[in-house]
Image 1 (cartoon, rainbow, N blue to C red):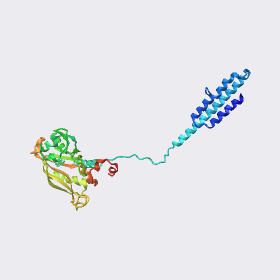
Image 2 (image 1 turned 90 degrees about the vertical axis):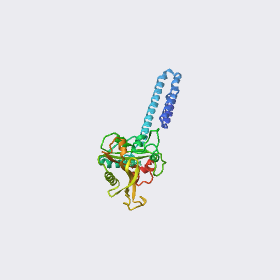
Image 3 (image 1 turned 180 degrees about the vertical axis):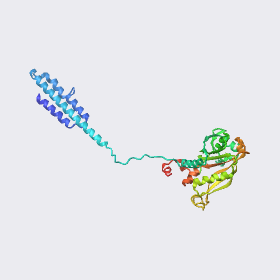
Image 4 (image 1 turned 45 degrees about the horizontal axis):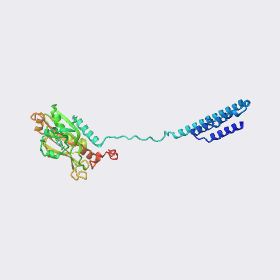
Length: 339
Ligand code: DAH
């Protein structure tokens, strides 16, 4: 019997030596100490042992059980500490490695251009106001001297919600809203999104941005308009920039003009950038038509004013020498991060 117990102990020890996981350890425990284990089988054989030998054999069995349990416990500790060691090794943190940089976004070129124009006019005492993008025909056309069937409506074809409501084609719609408000004098700019039913190409998009300007007061003259826009152009494109007013027609201003600035690349001599012209067109403007003032409840005998409208994308494209408007809308980070 003693010999048998010795054998069991040795077998357990040799199996433990090769145990490489807690699962394996459990298996060994069951094999030797479990209900159907080898040691339990020996205990069951006690009835064949002579009664006087039973206490001694019982003690031997107990000793063997304790020895195997201790060995199991020992191996378990060993395995656990090895596992912890391996995990720590894997989790090593190298504090000297360079940090991963967080990607910081920045303003879109359109936004930079808009804020630049706002900065210039706010500096001259203008207020920035906003108007709705979904607008009544009345504000977008009627009150700007563009009645139903006027050909100007064809040039600014847009997206209609119904007969009277549309996506505005120009920020000029804000003019009528502000004038109707009745607070005089007026000195505002109004940046915002506008829409036209245009095909996308390098210079057109069905959705783009304008900045409108409007000044109404007593004794406002064309000279004020010229001075204001000349100052604006210098601030935006550099102190040597000159402006040129070309006669034009807009239904809501009289007289009307288109304004060119000297090319800021060649200073007006003519280069590839200005296509040899020396001049670059940047906006439309004029003296607010007396009939428009009247329709908005302002007496044209007492008050006069000027207005202008700048294409924001045009400013951004010029300022950053971008040759295709589509780039501004594609949101390709490789393009945007250059500005
Ligand atoms: N709204 C005009 C356009 O989209 C631009 C414009 C011209 C605005 C003359 C004005 C203006 O306020 O006086 O073509």
